Amino acid sequence: MSVPVAPFSHLSTLWVQVTGTWCNLQCVHCINSSGPTDPWLKSLDTETVKRHVMEAEALGVKEIYFTGGEPFLHQDILELLACSLRVAPSTVLTNGTRITEKTADALAALAGESLYSLEIRVSVDDIDPEANDRIRGKGAFDKAIRAIRLLHARGLLPILTATEILQGDGPEGNGMYQRFRDLLASVGVTKPRVKIIPVFPAGRLAQEGGARLTREMLQGFDFSLLQCTETRAVADGGVYSCPILAGLKEARLSEGSLEESFTPCRLYHPACVTCYQTGMTCRNF
Amino acid sequence: MEGEREYRRIAVFGGVYSNYLALEATLEDARRRDVEAIFCLGDMGAFGPHPDRVFPPLRQAGVLAIQGNYDDSLGAGKEDCGCGYTDPRDNFFARISYEYTFKNTSAENKAWLRTLPKHQRIRLGEHRVLMCHGSPRMLNEFLWESTTPNGLLEKFMRDYQAEVILCTHTGIKWHRALAGGRHLVNVGAIGRPENDGMTNVWCAILTADAGLQVEFVPVHYDHEALAREMEREGLPSEFVETVRTGWWTTCLEVLPAKERARGKY
Ligand SMILES: [Fe+2]
Image 1 (cartoon, rainbow over the protein chains, first blue to last red):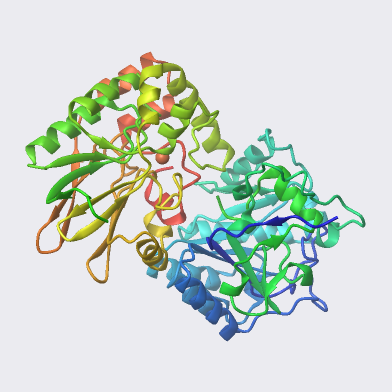
Image 2: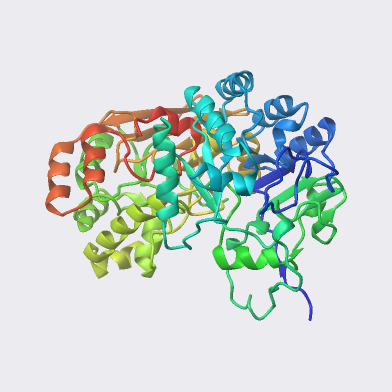
């Protein structure tokens, strides 16, 4: 049966898979199987990222996101953020482990100088340190909370980002959401911001023979609910349909040019079912 | 672009949010300022009490209005306000507000909302002006000052052939001048104070002379009277607090970092 496609509307968000799948943690639910050894997807070099940022600006991009892997492992991450913030509001998705006082100071300086907002999203998966660390690795909780405190102290208003791996309560519930807000309040965060994302059948949670979208399922469906109609991700090897599938050959739309990737994309992956069912977006809000 | 009305000086506001007392104060203020026309960028209902009370003043003053997401939803009988929130706490309060407004807006006023266009084009002197609610491409797109890149504005002005774009939807005013005498003006809202600890709301006066002059005018109204009516109507105390203090207590999660940092909550 033929694979359904999503039309492309406009470029709202550009994702930059800046460190590929290179990460100092190795979370059990990682959507792209990132880890410290032998990353299957390479980092992007500084010049390549800058070229994409400039191209995105000319195409009217609205927001730029940095992800990986762990973006703060990239040697030029601060320079890249400075470049990105001259063009558009920018967000970094991080595990927080590498955010020292010095890094937090540098981020605060970047945010202060920019016309556009800088957002830092710090990943935590449970309010219980031990449960969190079973998923994310020993010490991950404490380091993430330390990062959140350092950022908060500098007025940066980090967004705690959690997946539903341990305590999801579905689209209608908000017990999990409230628990994370309470956690933030308990460590002194006065403007608690929480973003919850579903777990994807991708990366370390990929399963053989997972369900796929069909043309029948998409009859009459509002495609604007799918983020791949207005997002693109750059990663080693080219431009891909979305941040979740970045780096996968089947999701590649162009070998380098952003504008060439403005074509319909194939909804071939089991992760596409999750977006279809939840209407989720990887954007901040 | 033949046939667009040309003006020299206009008043523009958005986000009435059922605040008929602020609306009356705004219209009175605009009349004193020698404007040729008054424009409203949509969202007549939401948040405040007695939604039907904003329609008579809007019609009597001959306000030229376009549809906001609220007007689109009420007019079409949609299930939610289409505000574009994703956060559970934002959506919780948005639902309360929409249910109250839907229930208390007459069929006649809903029908009137259906007749409103989604865009309005005029000329202000030499400038081609495009008015929209959220953004030119989307009724409920948020154009905050800290999340609207110049590159995107350049694209909008190219794609929609306008030198001046006017919008609202976020509830916080801002203005950015681009090279070549081009402007983006988010006129803010008259229905709710703008999260700065002040109880007044804001309206914009635009004047074409040598270039384009953009002036934001603070509008003071009897906010205490509004707060008491909201209490009598059983609207959430969080909404009432915002009217009395000028600080947002709800629909906060959609704020970008810079705008959020300026507020109390
Ligand atoms: Fe709106």
